[in-house]
Image 1 (cartoon, rainbow, N blue to C red):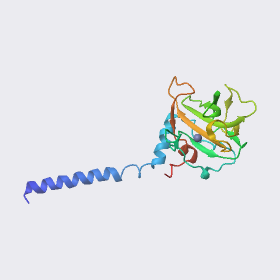
Image 2 (image 1 turned 90 degrees about the vertical axis):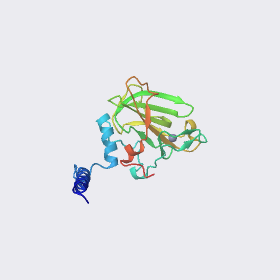
Image 3 (image 1 turned 135 degrees about the horizontal axis):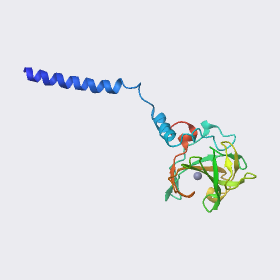
Image 4 (image 1 turned 30 degrees about the vertical axis):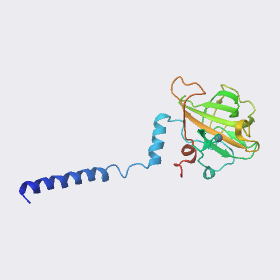
Length: 195
Ligand SMILES: [Zn+2]
């Protein structure tokens, strides 16, 4: 090989090594995907992390990621997490917020929409059998405060008692019905979906 050839080869090897060192000698091995995801949420809502499991007595480990499951014979997708529980089990606030709307709908049945203190998130509780005593629009809730009771109202199906729990990212000006649903599973389970 010519001298020029060796020079070019040396430059290539050096640049590959330099690139490799940037990858491997950065700040540690970098955050895990879950940590990066959590960091994004932390950036948006520093006070809204650490969601409580919104049904009393349900273990974090028993949650199932039902986000995206087909509904309505495949005509739509599930934009929440269903938490199976006996009828009448206490539903509690997953995070602090203000009750923005108490609403009855064909799909959700008896529902509650709770807006985070930052106003950046809405937590949605559906298929309730009823509200906790004293729950009213405008009431401020701490995480763990009573919201209502697990039921099968709306399109849950008779006897299919569960809490349909949704989380929506809200932009300024979004009403309680608006926002962009995000998967609550990682926020509740504290880990990425096993799927
Ligand atoms: Zn559901």
